[in-house]
Image (cartoon, rainbow, N blue to C red; front, side, top):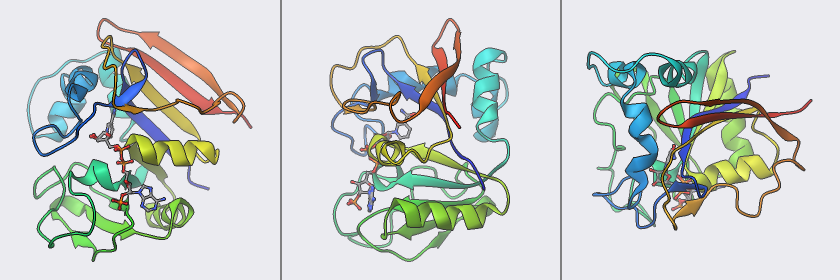
Length: 215
Ligand SMILES: NC(=O)c1ccc[n+]([C@@H]2O[C@H](COP(=O)([O-])OP(=O)(O)OC[C@H]3O[C@@H](n4cnc5c(N)ncnc54)[C@H](OP(=O)(O)O)[C@@H]3O)[C@@H](O)[C@H]2O)c1
């Protein structure tokens, strides 16, 4: 069985995974960019964008883990873009340009069906409207023996978490207070769901925490 893994999911000190008011100008919600500063500084992230340089060490190692043995992704419709409701046309193809950084099939949860979009570099966006289990099954098949990465956003992660379907969840806690937005764990008893903290490593930028589901 492929594992369902979360990596490099940034949260604020007060537990938010995205700021409020996401739109074209604020893909991560207002203030949400602060949750990703550690990641965009890493060599792994810069390489993903075709850039040289970047930090090495613990932050980079955690970022790199998230790309090993991943054969498919699942994301929510709001991570895919800022458009809500029925698709007005076929123009929006994600935030990431012609060659998105996934390089695998990506299953986008949405209530609004849409034809698949093949991008450069091996990424194909498939739109799934029959629920989280169907998305996981399709992603597991597409991963072809590798694991599935759950990219986010918050609403999507919360659904998989409540069903106990996430095997491993790496969170990077930034020293920032957002005060509002999308809260990752509010009202969820992760301990009762069988999760425990199996790793916690502070760096000067963030604290890395790994939650793993017990057997
Ligand atoms: N902190 C991080 O590391 C990180 C990582 C990724 C993303 N983000 C941020 O998180 C924010 C997005 O998170 P979010 O919680 O707003 O939304 P999300 O989880 O990305 O997407 C939620 C939307 O996906 C669709 N959806 C979700 N579950 C579904 C289901 N079971 N069946 C059908 N459709 C379903 C619905 O859209 P429709 O009903 O409209 O189709 C729903 O409104 C963005 O700001 C993004 O940048 C942060």
